[in-house]
Image 1 (cartoon, chains in turn blue, yellow):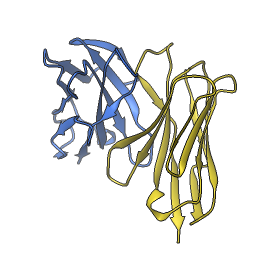
Image 2 (cartoon, chains in turn cyan, purple; image 1 turned 180 degrees about the horizontal axis):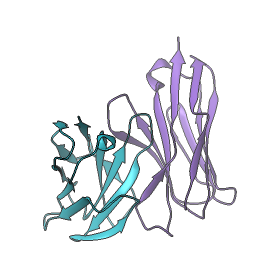
Image 3 (cartoon, chains in turn purple, cyan; image 1 turned 90 degrees about the vertical axis):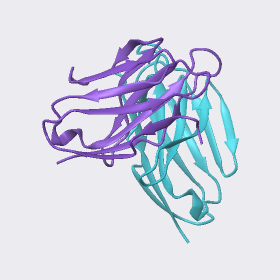
Length: 113
Length: 113
């Protein structure tokens, strides 16, 4: 176990709705990154939060947004859900000091119908 | 844009055989990671390679990194059924920023008894 926890584990939403996914980072880690993994593909970087600010963003539209809280936990929000948003969403926590390694949570499986 | 390519995409091998998975990437990086993913599960960290010539071994798996050739290999020795999974390499490009991983397409490995 990595110490990174995500909630919920599964979620079904209707097209056009909004969703919030949550991630608690590993103790001592101040950086959280979010990834989207579509079925049969590798994870794609969405964005990263470091010390409560966005610290880099991948090729995702603005309807994907996030937050990081003072305890370094994080949320991923997706507005106006589309069918193609159906995927496994992975959160990874890391630290800017020490060995540069990302530890992944168990993921949230989002299905948009 | 950083590109990460793995080959083969699919690999079916008999127990007891040896094989190598290749990971090529398109830009300068001295940080490469290997992950394992079981069906429906999250990513398990296998190896962190942080310098040219780095070699790490764990059980029947050995990973190496050649930063000049922009190539990493994951070698499987005397495969056993428990190694069946999808293996991803991921590159951490300093141009893009630390711990913002670009993943390969994955290699789905099936070990046949």
